[in-house]
Amino acid sequence: MHAQSCSTLDVPAAQRMRYWESAIAPYFGRLRGDDDAGGLDFEARCDIYDVGGLGAVRMQVPLSRVTREARDALDSGGGYFKLSMQIAGAADVHAANRTVHLGPGDWIMLDQRLPYTWESAAPASLFGLQIPRERLAALGLPSLVCSSDEALADSGMAPILGGHLRTLNTQLAHVTEDAAHLLAEASIGLLATTLSSGRPPARAPVDALAAVRLRAVQYVRLHASEATLSVDAIAHALRCSRRYLYKAFDGSDASPERLIWQTRLERCHEALRDARNHARSVSSIAFENGFNSDAHFARMFRARYGQSPARLRRSLRAQAQGSRSS
Image: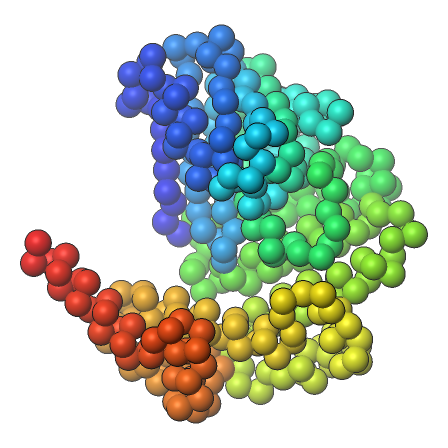
């Protein structure tokens, strides 16, 4: 997979910290670096891969200290949870009235609306996932959780999630675009299972509904291209009744049916915008993503995006021709 990368190595030494803050802001929000920590030797690199809508981040940092402040909670970084593993070196994370020490193999998950300070006392390597909040909706996640938490350690799930992150870090270059969505859902499912294993029993009824909803979302994302996908099929796969499945979606802005069609429409929209598919017919893309009627697809697409698939394609082609001519 292709990575978006940023590095301070070619930046004048006096500008490195400010450049780094700006370069990683789209992924982590506003982070304020301490010039006294890294000094002029601030040599850092970050590679970000898109894994099915998750940001897979590899980072090398020098001795450094960065802080995320409460006033920045709702910036671009606030839309994500940050799951990060220490690959090499060590760090201390100060957040939620706690200090968590991370050594190689340790991981932490932070709500990026939470103020925190991250200190690396020496050069370090990290790997992690940036997970959109909506992908973990209704789970009632804590602001901070880490692999050393007693409840997680007792469940045995913390090292399993850690092993998954280590494997993902080493295999990113071999992940195909087609496999990325499956890998993203597997990662979220494993994270949800790990976090649920450390929760007190009193929350089980609420968590059970949230878990069903999350599993339903995962199932739809994996099977959206199948024309036979239905509410009954989801309920059967999740071993629950239709009524219980609908209950899991109470209070959300979606229903199981809407989830199916929105997922299919999003896949089609993404495929139509992909230059590699410009020679393919609209019908083939629609049928590949679970639709079995051109008219039905065109009607739903227009309702969702305000224009027909054909008009979107014409607009994209005109933009491409304009770019080439200029």
